[in-house]
Length: 330
Image (cartoon, rainbow, N blue to C red; front, side, top):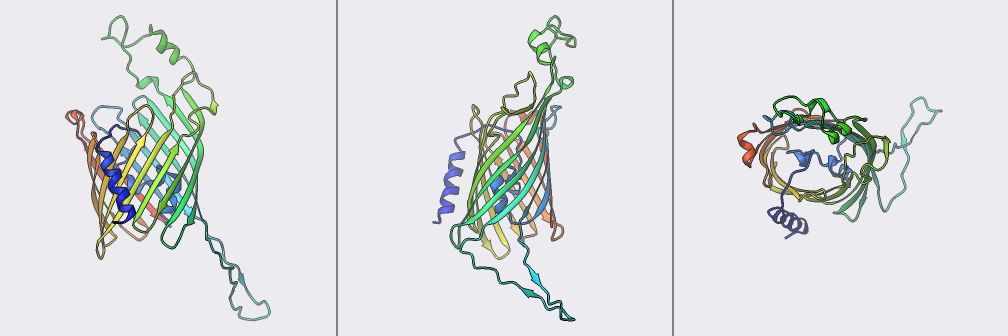
């Protein structure tokens, strides 16, 4: 059995023992790899701009909502073209490039993410870079970095606080801790950073990344509120099974960790037909079950949609979640 398949099966087995939830999260996470790891831009060599929107646990009011705009491009070195000015019809002469033993590929990208959850909102803008290095004729590795700014804010108008004297009445002050909390600036602007690594071949990939490395220590706007940003660790792996000509089964597992929360683990299996249509399922351990489908409308444009339902008691009060993904290649 191939090494990639063994690793994927081991991580999927590990997922049956762990659970929790972290945000932002996506049902179609295998389509949005660069959101979890900047080095994952090298896994998708297509130059594209994508938009992903997610509404989670609808029915409660002020539910988590996430909108992400992200893109990437591969650096292409221009080939020098020489023309003979003495000739009436210039004949193109392509310069012969020197033979390189190792061909390095550079990827540049960026992402804008807005994540709303209750009275809290997080908005971040990051620039991404990835360097892809071939190991041999089958395997390649990539290193990625991201750096940007993140703004965390609290909207007191969307927060519900009990009245100390009469819980049935609106809050009108009296809680010293909360009053001090809302007396100062309710947002904090700080630097954001992350790094990642991938290893892949045509069928298998494994992606490891650490995001929000600096936490919120390098603040650009001072605030009395400590949003207590933590480092997020992401591990993603996937294997592509060639079932028949034009029919593939893409499996993936995503594990997320943020101290002190427990592991968040989910897996997906997506079948593609003629490389145009796809459909599959997503299972988030002890949280939700989702279904997704999509198609390539043109060679450049593709869309995807997913619907998920809670597998816990929350399902009695929630109408599930929706997610829309669009991508345009250029």
